[in-house]
Amino acid sequence: MSQLKSPKPAKLIIGYFLKERSLAGPVTEALTERFGPTDLISPWIPFDYTDYYTKEMGRPLFRRILTFTNLIEQDDLPGIKLITNGLEEQWAKEDLRQVNIDPGFLVASRFVLASGKDFTHRIYIGQGIYADLTLIYTKDRFQPLPWTYPDYQSEPVQQFLVKVRQKYIIDTDGKIR
Amino acid sequence: MTLNPELLKMLACPQCKGPVEVNAEESALTCSTCKLVYAIEDDIPIMLVDEARPLDD
Image 1 (spheres, chains in turn blue, purple):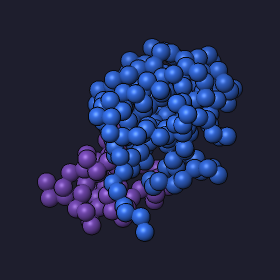
Image 2 (cartoon, helix red, strand yellow; image 1 turned 180 degrees about the vertical axis):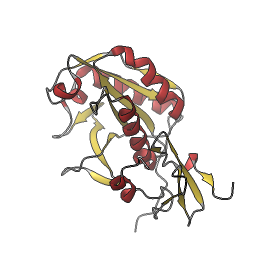
Image 3 (cartoon, one colour; image 1 turned 60 degrees about the vertical axis):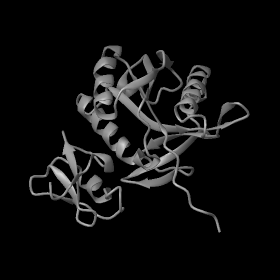
Image 4 (spheres, chains in turn cyan, orange; image 1 turned 30 degrees about the vertical axis):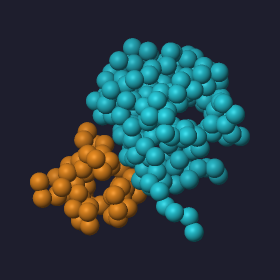
């Protein structure tokens, strides 16, 4: 019988994409007000892998990823997703989102995103939210899975997440593998 | 109340996973088992244990 252990604290990562980059300031302010200071911020990454959001949000779209200094408990993810869903609604105009916010977390071995949609590979984690195992870390990089979104497979995002992982290892005194 | 009724059905106390009830002012959700109150701010339920306040506060 296995010995139960408390789950490791995780690095909160919130990606967002939008058309109007002038919204970045208010988005960041709202997220830091709720989740604390950011530590790593990605450059703007073109979000052009799909036309799925064009009708709702327009184009071109741009993604940015923020990480937060304060580590989270892994089971905070549903509550965090509810908050970011609420923020999306607050910025929506006539029910059309101006910003799409994707919270998730990273631990040494994997990167997980929260989703409100059920799917074959997603696990229900409460409050109407599912966990999507988006990337696993093995052979010195984050490996995509068959369902990984194309932008999370891209080289700019991969490079950023490797840096985030390095910081996470440092922040947790190198004891977490 | 502007909280989506369908969402309200799915919400649970993040600590004990038990049911929560909306208060009379519709400004918070209460877990009577854990005696914790989760705020609703700008129509957003804050379902984080660290941000809950004790019921008796």
